[in-house]
Image (tube, rainbow, N blue to C red):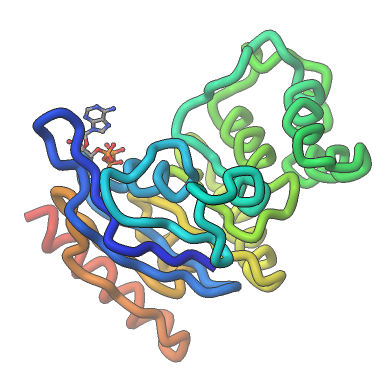
Length: 233
Ligand SMILES: Nc1ncnc2c1ncn2[C@@H]1O[C@H](COP(=O)(O)OP(=O)(O)OP(=O)(O)O)[C@@H](O)[C@H]1O
């Protein structure tokens, strides 16, 4: 579970996040929505421990990164919005590299490659992969060790409709294992399918939270689209 208490972030003079608190339960999926510069990536990077909050704390399963970084990092998986690795590594080498830190068995690496449809590309260098394949690989890296909390920055960017549907199915299964999932997206249909809660952000603040009661999926979609269009106007 995630417990965010009063975190804020200022870059030089620019406030990227005003003090914000949020919790995410085991098995819950939280989706962050909002326009460019709303603060979604800043918040996700703070939960991932990549960017330190100016103020406040983030706890994962009660662990504070400032007190036990090693344990904190072992509890999370993070998919950034851009590729960050040496692109001359092959698909298998890249996942093996990350798997080594997390003591992931080779059989699990193979399983993730298969599930993500990357088996035909397993010996291909990352630089030769399409955008969608890179996205799947980045997702695989985050999910590899079955973390307690999965943090994904715009995971469906560049995915074709087939892989968007697969991604939605995967997240539904991952939630059932008790993993807390938090991700950002501009795709309301993806949010409507998997979110238990959708958090709208604007200029570094939470502006609205829409809870999914799972009783009326159509109404949830209507509520999300209504809120999204309101923001666009
Ligand atoms: N490293 C940085 N240095 C300075 N300002 C930054 C930095 N990272 C983010 N910001 C600023 O913080 C604000 C929030 O940015 P952030 O990337 O979190 O938004 P976002 O909601 O993820 O946007 P997008 O949908 O475009 O990815 C923006 O005004 C951005 O310019």
